[in-house]
Structure formats: C-alpha cells, structure tokens
Image (tube, rainbow, N blue to C red):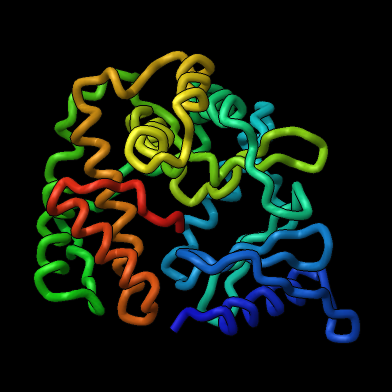
Length: 297
C-alpha cells in the first residue's frame, strides 16, 4: 500500500542513491502533499516526487526528458536535478527537482495563461517521444473500481466514465493538436521566490487537444467559483481564445468533472473525507446541482 511512510522511505533511499545525503549526514524529509504522488521537500532546495509503482517508470522518464527539453527552449518549468534519474526505490519511482519556492504560492492567472500559451506554441523534437493523450484510457483498459462508494453511486460513475472514454475523441476539437500539459490549472503553476511563474507536475505531458489544457480554468470559474469572472476574462485575454464559446464546451466540462470525481472516488475505500466529497460530487452530477460547494483536492 502506498502511504506517507512508504513514500518517505523511498525519498530517503533516493537521496542516498543519488548522493544528496549519506547515512552519516541525512537530509530532512518534509511532506508537502500526498495525492497520486507523494511530494516531499528534501533538505532546503530539493523537491522529491514519489510515484507509487514501478509501472510508472516510463512516465517518470518522460517527465525528466520533457522538463529538460522545456528548459532548453526557455519555457519556465521546475528544473529536474542534473543527476541520473528517475530512481527506483522500494517499488516506487522517485524524481528529484530543484525547489523554486519555500512554500506553495500560486502564480497570478495571467501567468498561468501565458505559460499554457507558450507551451502550446512548442513542437516536440524528433528525439522526444511523447505519448498520445488518453485521459480516460482506451477500450482495452478496465474501468476504475470505486470501492468504498455506495453501489449505485459507483455504478453511475462507471457509466459516466465509460461515456467519457467513448466520446472524448469524437468531440469537435478546433485547436491544433499538439503538446499539452494535461493537467493545466493554477494549482500547477507556482510563483518562484525570484518572482517568476513556474510550471510543475509534468505527469500528463502528452500530445493531445489543446482544449484539454483550458477546460479546468473555465470550470473553476464558471462552475466552481474558484476564479472570479475578472480572473477568467484575464485568462482568455492572455491565452487568446475562450473555450466557453466552443460548441464542445459543455461535454468536455462534464468529462473533466467526471475525471476529477473519479480520481477522488478511487480513494474512498481508505479515506472517509474523500468518500464524502466524492458522494457529494456524484449527487451534483446526477441531479445537475450546484458545484459551488465542491472542495479543492
């Protein structure tokens, strides 16, 4: 089981393997957050990201390669340490990054839009093979299991997830397909101690529809109330296109809500707070109710 303790042990092991620490001079390991990955501060200047399974090694390789490419073309991203990585430790995969800020201060929305726009202007070099984006998996993959949810809720969410999987590629995308972040939102753009906005969390970097990088900011504003109307207007002005005016907006917004709720529902069996939040979200999706009380995770 992937826990804070197992993730912390992997960070300690990676610090030893990489030479960032020794048995006699260990570095402090401070939890930042536990989600799909464990994220820790290692010493004063390093952030360690821990993926829970060796099956994610190829994805970690991609993250490091993408980060180094982004840096080479001047895109502001968290720098991967110049060491041999990723590092496999205790069944986990660890990547090590230079810390860009002491805390987690999010960048202004204009900077979020600017970084997404700059990323969307890039073309992957021939030597970098980015995967095609399949945010809901493909038909060969099993549907998620939602243990810990009410049976009816779990079945409803599975049906909606299947709909998203089967319908995603048929949406009437109009922006040119290309490099995307895959989880672009204000929570993945930090304000560095030097005042620069920095893109983080490259797990989902891929080739896909650019609309997918715009949908979260739109629903954060329109459905959840996490951005003001003024902030969203700034985002649109800086990026240069308003996804809310696109004919596929409602369907893609619904799909992104399903993705967010599915991620949370997978944690329901071992996390009462996640189960409660997932249940609330499923009820809103079922009934068309307000999303304004959805909690940020």
